[in-house]
Length: 317
Image (cartoon, rainbow, N blue to C red; front, top):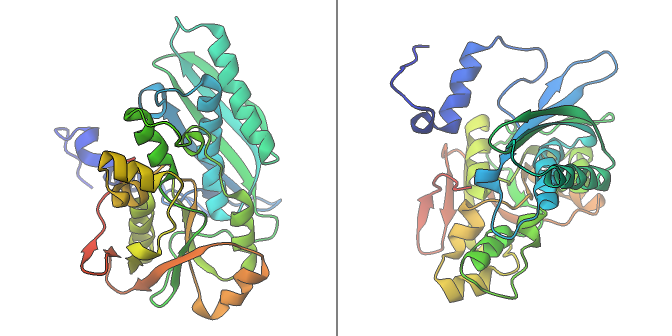
């Protein structure tokens, strides 16, 4: 692959950057770059691992506490484990903090991370600290405990598309803060809850053909599954489960529901596809979910508004 020194990282974009990196590094055994987590072969069983980071600049909305920032740093990684169906075991955290920052905020960040880890049966096993611009990068480790990991790449035409929980609450919380609206909860934005139990149950059901977490939004998740599976999707706007606050924010600010539910992100739900002949297996595991569409041969995901059908764009988050 030929790389141009004239292209900035911003111009290249995250998707193309990852593709370029994958062409540089050697192919690894197990499952390497390209999914929510890596699957690392081990004599004691596969190790599920992922790394993700948050920064003061991009992930610290108005009103967020340092403890909530720490919770989010852990949650974004635990959510990736959930999308594979892995049970969280532990986290490593690398903190890059401004040298003039008081020590107490750093302690609060670590306390938030530990509370999140504790909520899902995991521990903080170590990490690193450096001076820098204000960022936390975590590596999360999980275990499948005999289950098969769910990947992005298994969707097939005719499979059903579904999602856990509801969509748009995190975006509604953000826009409510930005527009001074009271009475709209900011909890989904400040302390997102990974769907670990749901991920484990989905994996155990044997019905799921692909899965991804929605921290980057439904549209981005759908595009990722379609790209990895070489399929398309038809998703119906009318079928999307609307999160708390979406209706009010839309009516009082003019921000479209589609923007909050499809493109903004911040909802740590799971988007998954499943074999339509194995639907009963999902209900046998007491899973609550909404069916929102079907996998197709179109190559890209489409959103159907009833009166029009259009290809999904890129996520914003």
